[in-house]
Length: 268
Image (cartoon, rainbow, N blue to C red; front, side):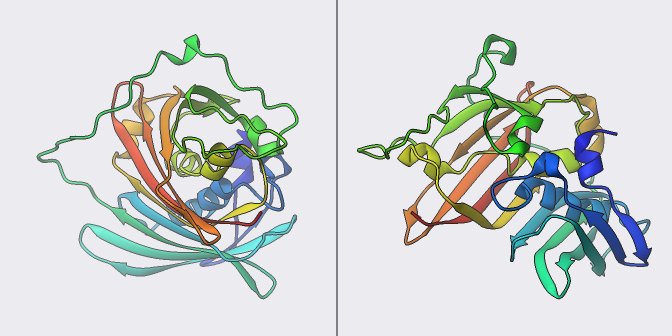
């Protein structure tokens, strides 16, 4: 079993209630990597027999730290229409709601399509040396990062003037894994905090809320195999302890797979 599938696996306790356990392989500073939390909540919906279509939107609110060990996931359908279905899911440890999510699934219809967005120029991934993951948080070692621009270069002292918040890079799993929505939502949170790039130092930050929109169906994802994705991340504003973070995930063939935004809190 791939490490991501193991980390997001759930066992049903009763209908609508499941149990999971944190994974040391995807540990971040003080809890699980947020992408694996989002993927776990999405899996709770995708595993439902009454789920229709594919996910098209996921919003996750990270409400409390998740401690090492078991947790409970509850999931329920909010409303099902002819082509769109709304879900609510949450992770609990004891009486604490550690994360909650709203997830929208839909049956996509064949018809007119248009993609005005264009991918950023980038050399092929094999032409770029992967970032070393030695000495970083455990979850980083589960992935490959090949920076085209905006590499993470932390130092002991903050930059004298703010640097660019933009990064462009090829991303993939360190252990190959074919693409699906579990992997895609995890990668929506894989970009390092933009404030690290701007200030040039590492200090505590935490994603408060993240939304991901998917622009493909399961067949399109499956056709990608385990190929790397091209990611672009940026930010618009850093103010009063919070900053936003936006990102795109592209296929090597120029298909926009997902767009995502999040609000992050920081303290210096």
